[in-house]
Length: 167
Image (cartoon, rainbow, N blue to C red; front, side, top):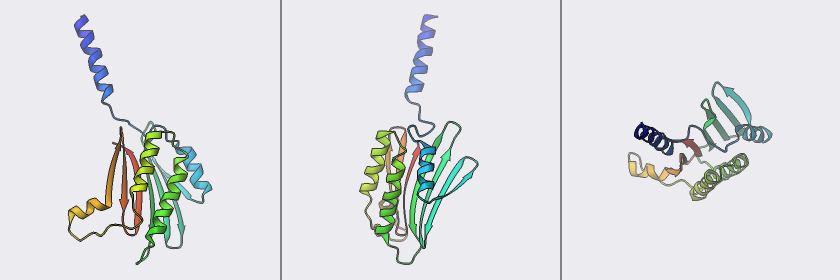
């Protein structure tokens, strides 16, 4: 009986030590929602998602929240310019500005630090990509792990984004 109890508790400890997060801990969705609305974003709630959008001429910024039962599962920030000759530095500056505002609603220091680091590594101009070359796509998309979370960045010509989510 004693061996069975030891085995049982060992399995419980083992399973919890390798469990992944179900939601983004330390991210206050309501605080971020208020920050974005006060910054002029239009807000729409659809089932288990929040969508924010702000448009100024051909420039657009979007922030999307995706929830699971316990809380926020994924947050994505997108900045883009709908033009044949996009102003990449302006797109990057807007992405930085919005992300800095959103970070005010995040109390998870490792996640916040990794977001800032990922943004700092993203150059204002997108890398050259040759059609059909898979190796070139790796230049556009970057993936960073932060414990149970991931930070993904996309550095396209017309669109730049950062996404945090549970793995």
